[in-house]
Image (cartoon, rainbow, N blue to C red; front, side):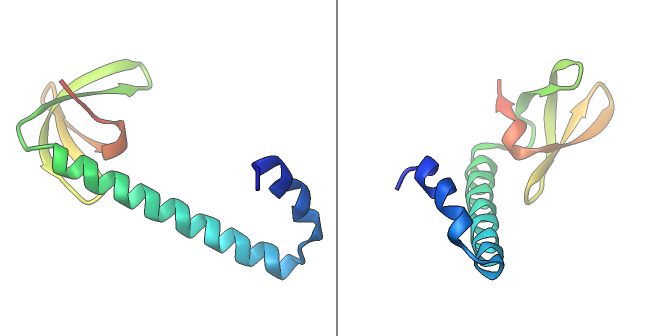
Length: 90
């Protein structure tokens, strides 16, 4: 089933079915994010140089601590709490 067909068929579902579908989709997204974070956690090490896209452009720093879904990164004496999926090793 394609996404287009799927979205067209949403109107045939009851409100309870839509709520149940929403729960399933949200759960699936959470599982994917957890897997992605676990893979990223394994690829990073304390002391490693990393970069990420911040609001003002690319930021470079050093990993100080790796938490479950974020890493603490030292940038010019300041510690930033950065989501793991934003980090790239340099």
